[in-house]
Amino acid sequence: MWSEASAWFERHRATLAVAGIPLAARLEPDGGLMCTYADGIIRLALPDPTQPGGQLRVALLAGLLGLEPEQVVWLFRTQLPRLVAHEIGHALRDEYGAAGSDLWTEERAAERLAWLLAHPHVPAATRRALLELIAPVALRLGGLAEGLGSYRLRERARELPELRGLSPVEPTSESHRDLSTFLRVSVAWAYFDLLLEPEDNLDDYRTDLLVAR
Image (cartoon, rainbow, N blue to C red; front, top):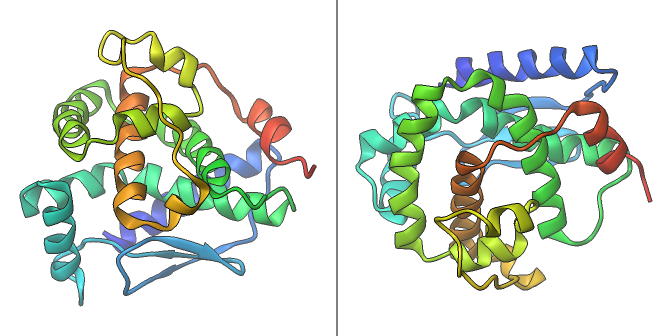
């Protein structure tokens, strides 16, 4: 899984370079539970059962998400393009001096780039399979209201039949650091992105999110 993630990192870097958005950060494996970015380094903690600590990460995530271990491995493997792109989003905001103190704002910015870079590489059949897997997880975790309240395309999402009548609740800034809240909201956002077809491009992303304010 690490070699696949590394390949996606280089592929995304090339796509960004063509769009005139150079990336200086480097990629490293991490032994923790969460993928992170700090000080020019993107660290990926992957649930790869063939690697040291990977089996434990698979078991922990399976328990948190309510999935079978093999479903967790499949989910992360199919979402590698998005996972890598999300952390690149954090790196770019830092490199351009555009990152702010509101952590949910930073997550939305990273998710926008994640969708832009990953969506073209996810076949329709895989999207349907992901939606079938993620929808019940999102409902089970109970984060749809929080996810809707903080979603970057909130108004469009509110019109979806699946979400109509749902009252959005904005999570507090501090709740970003709470693993259960972060997990609920992240899964809800992934679910919404699978339901929607956002219209977006890298030029607009750069103008909106990579200009320091």
